[in-house]
Length: 437
Image (tube, rainbow, N blue to C red):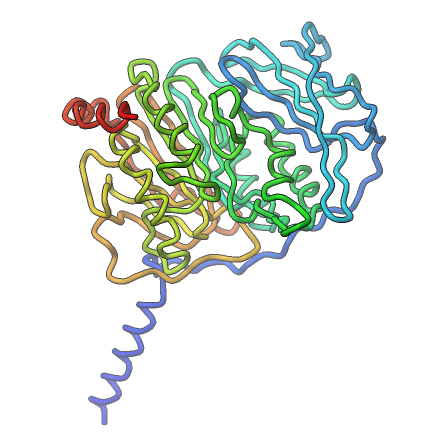
């Protein structure tokens, strides 16, 4: 009888271990509710939902919304508080979504700007003064990375932790507001992130929650494209869903998991052309973001990125992409350098970081045994920090939200591919893939 009892307890322990994430020593905090934003009366011409993004070399795009359609689309700015020695006029747009009408959405590009400099600015000729800091022109440069944000108590915790960081650019691999057709949630999200997004550039790409397509009524990504204009034109892309930009010595490519990506698509052609123009002497680091992960040992969203991976991984491998960041899976995972589904010293480090705080909760079930390419995985909310120190070394750390304290749970030094000799080894094959018609 005692033997049967022991066997039963062992079986229960094994079954429980299979259903838990790798870090079984961590007691995960409970989910948190969606945030609510009481409407505060504002003068219709005052700017709100202010956020900034990079817009080509030494330029920044300032975006904001007014409820007054006659409010001017102008940004005044300078390096001293209240003293605006420069100004720039912008463009406006708006959209209707069923019974919802957006305010007047403004986008104004300012510059040329000095590197690593604080600028004070005002939108629309009135209202509060904001300040931003431009990224440095050379190493070191620091990115924060957080995807699948949403608008919950955990989202606020993540943003509070990011606010404590010393960083230059925020990278977001899709799923911003979780509005899901409820357009007022886009407005709430804009207010929630304004304190951070008005001070440092937010570079974002789309996720499935940005689609919001209603057949015969609305197009896909209508709200996202109107509100979050990225530098696609500046990078010779024809779509706001994929583009590239450069910061210090880093070339960053933002791809679209929810637009065509096969070899006959515009996105594929653009990616191939963009990669072929990268100058690794100028930008020795090459980083890519998209929403759906290619390397994922979580049960959630298994196989969803296989099609895009089959089409585009050969291009990324040929170009020597150092890092890929993805979201979608509400958990964290870091791989070894990989290619074609297995470890490869000349491959790419893939990091899934869809753990910003969304309302859908965490993806807590992982595949066992752990794939040989997976280095660290844990289902917790948090954010990441990538400090690229120089042309050869970068330090990556992931910070778990633990009862409102940012806890560094994973960290690793990463060596650039250009310094490893990998690019020289595959130069001939790469030229055939990237240059061929």
